[in-house]
Length: 426
Image 1 (tube, one colour):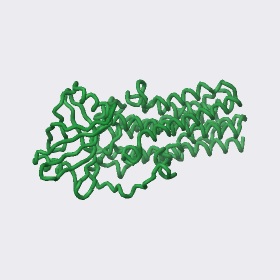
Image 2: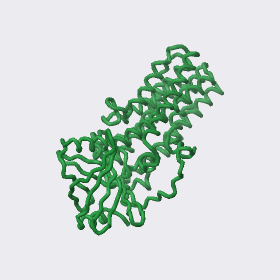
Image 3: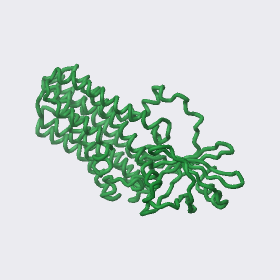
Image 4: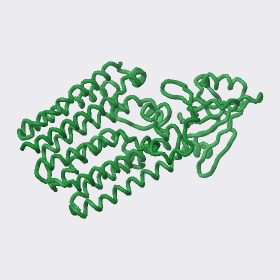
């Protein structure tokens, strides 16, 4: 097994360190270093040195540690900066002798089965479904569907506009996922130790970053193409919703805006996939505004918010290392958990308000059938202690974001059924 102990044992032989990375050109350079027992490598170069500045911009390097007796280790590492010091955190180790490879995850060093990767992964449908995180796209589809079902109840509905809206929402969401994965990778936010990204194709370095970036642009262009069909039918009035959604997807991680890295990611994602998508799809159908639609859209946005919130909570150490800001960092663990519990309860209060104010929508009471997944989401996070280490330790078995996603799917599905029944029997 290869791990930090392997690095430390090799360090005793005073090996030579060779770094390889791509900046404005391809660099390959021998560097003096020191190493501690955890395997963290500190380079003997100043942070303001030209070579060091190029290294920091790269964020990731390949390295080779070679001793005089022929033994050695190669691998990949994240670039760290602490004051004026530059360090390397290895996350992949390979033995040149037997090509045995290990990666560092939140559970420690585990074997990397590189031989199981298909030689032409990007030609596979399974690869692209994994790359786009296809399961998350259902959330956008349901948000658009609920807005359109409200329009159906109001007496104004077009199946053509529904299909355009759903396809546009899914493509915009796909673009956001691709852009997020690309920027998280190049900025060293995603790593093999981040629980949320360990299965990602970029975090596992199964594809070139440029390929994922191109996929994001293609998705965004297709969404723009669909916009022309919407405006041809409904005029320019829906453009405000559409442009806001496209800009939200494009600037999620894109500097200088990059609101995900500034502690606004959870809030804006909740607004985009809740009020913007639900109200936007309703407006595309009717050209009008509706208070009950707004209330239900806020409820859906709260659940989406909670998915992002708890996802960032368990990745807090990796986000801190990457130097970005998320809401759990600002609030701390205990207050983040309280906010999470609240946003799993408030959607039912909003549904109740709609029913009380608009009795004709009484069938929205079906949303209360999703109380069980909401309660399970709350209980599973409540089982953990108020520290990140315990939350990360229990993540594989309690899987907090999946619990919130199940709650969303249940709440959105029962709300949709309630709206359909209202339309059929009104």
